[in-house]
Image (cartoon, rainbow, N blue to C red; front, side, top):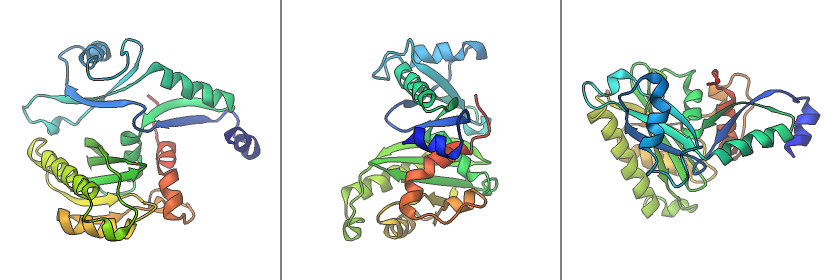
Length: 255
């Protein structure tokens, strides 16, 4: 299907940012090794070897550094993104087979940040939540920079009448509140004032209201049209399916 679309739309040879979704990779929050920059990836490879279920010797590894004001004298932490080499090779081969060129490989947590470039996140912290297929990603962002990200396993009920009484919603609420507290107390940041909720196929209005009532911050629905100029109005269902692809396409760097 992709090969046919590429041919029909004249997209052959175009560079592509490929977004992996959990659980095709691991994103780990670890203490930063005290080594030179050119030795960092090798050092973290050794550090995470017992934290992942695949062989790290030939895994693809990248490091995400956090802002200096996130620690204020405490132990400096970093995010390490690791994916099995087979996952990277499959992505490259898949795009090659469809006449596209792999430019970069991204992950859901980082791709989501691309949607916030048109919004003001300098004066206050912004939480952003994306839920899909039993997986949830929660980011805490300030000054267009990621400070904290959490991957939350959650399967919300489709029946809106059961939402707020469900174990899944209470789990989501607890993990979100813990993340907000950590962002304030451990990272020393001013309280987040807004939670941006990406579109859902079901329970969108009910979830927004329930989170708004229980978290004490303003919950807003984010729309693709707010992040991408000229985008036609898309249904919530289509926005949910396309959100990470569009977020990946908004990436400005290939590193």
